[in-house]
Amino acid sequence: MTTTRLVDLDSYFARIGYAGSRQVSLATLNAIIAGHVQSIPFENLAILLGQPISIDPLAIEEKLVHRRRGGYCFEQSTLLLHVLEALGFSASALSARTRYRSLIGASLTWAPLRLRRTVRARAW
Picture (cartoon, rainbow, N blue to C red):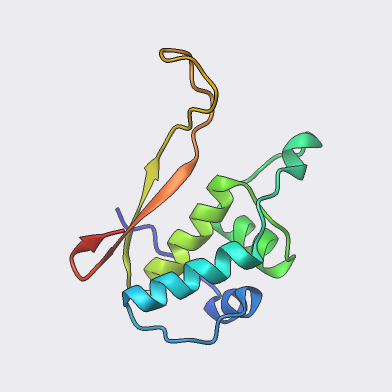
């Protein structure tokens, strides 16, 4: 499933401090992910304040890139998905569940979004 939209790559790269290659390669992927996780923090303040969270790509880009805020997993992964697709990476969104200190068979409430990237026919 391709979800590509126009993303402001120059502003995104400035936000994460990335000035490297834009070629589809494992080195580029690793550098972008490192810059992203080091520059855009996990943030759940809006949730705690009862403010609505938009998963619209334009709203996410505005919040995380232009307003220099952090975001929670769906916001982070959606932004990164659009960036990688804009660069030509084959990427897809995956849903996941986290089990932390819960009994086997217990209801799992967390469902973070994860990305699967393919570089040279190998999934990462």
